[in-house]
Length: 85
Image (cartoon, rainbow, N blue to C red; front, side, top):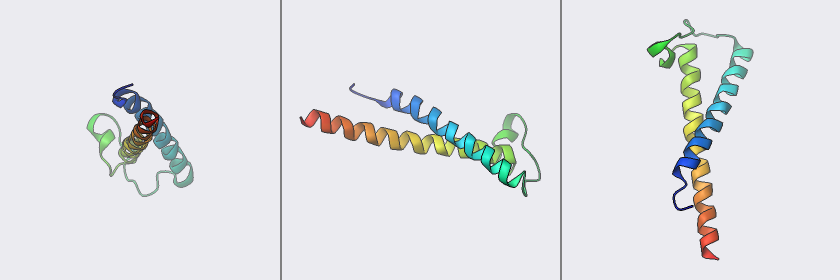
């Protein structure tokens, strides 16, 4: 595989965002809504980080990007090791 970008991006972001949603569910079970005055809602309010839903959505996005970067680095290193043989 010459360029693993698509494979890493799709699998990395989906897995990372899944982990982010589990983080959000655990946070909600542990804290309830805590000091978030608004739960968020639909449309642009769903991505406002001062609302509960926005905080969780941003956590999912950050987890997704972080997992993509980790996966892409690992696949690149694996390719380098395989091509060195």
